[in-house]
Length: 351
Image 1 (tube, rainbow, N blue to C red):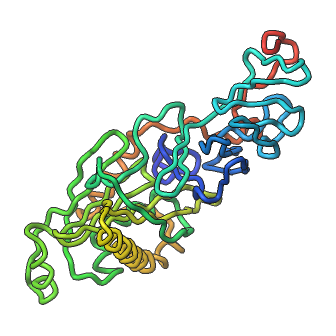
Image 2: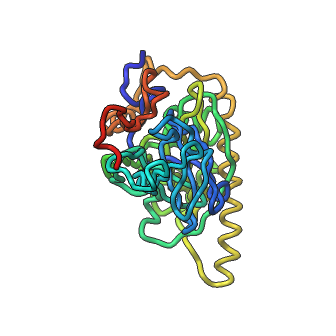
Image 3: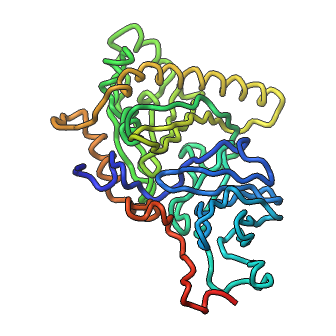
């Protein structure tokens, strides 16, 4: 049993935004089934183009709502044609002459689209935004999707790799020295930034020092423990990568890299952005390939922490202080899916 309540746990996650699908995977008027972070959903795009995520099973007899059809911006169950609005309320029961029920509903979850992805909030009401790059906060941005991948370990373990300063020397063979200082942005986001000046003791460090007035730029912000934004590069040009991760079956991670840069509106700026996003993709692949063997076989257990592990311990502490998402069903309730079933003996639920 894990010593933590969230970190590296298979049966709990922090409440927050998690990516679910590529936007292009869901057409207007289409509904798809989705097993997502331990819960089964019916997720659809209404005729108005907006995404809706409902608990998968109809609270009448348990038919899967993804077998139904879209009508306007609502979803009608295939079995008895009960109709559900985007907020989860049942608005029509044909067997009752179409008269809408008073209390019958299924759970609806907040959904947004950003960076070409569909994101679902694992709670009733979002308290913070979809993850963004702190340096680009408030700016218009351009983005592109990078590689989609699966790792053989928990998302939290993948995340801490970016603040494991020593592994940049041992795994990636980079002759740099990093010391990460943490700062909380909010209760669900913490950022780590390098504060170590470049020591020109080698030709490589003397070369890169020319492009920095202060420490080598490297920062990593963590949102909800499973999405991280990396900022790096010389003072005159920063590169930004978002690693959006989620837990899948058998304790594995499915991830999606997102390449981000500030928007430049001139023709030259558009061409520059295309180059920057392409180069950022190359940088992301370099680091991902170097870590591939580690994530294939690691069984994380930090038994002997040392001084350089301090950022990892700070990340774990911050994650452990976050609110646990209440939506993941337990083993006993997975088949029920947390809907509010009609009680046969009660006449207060229907017209």
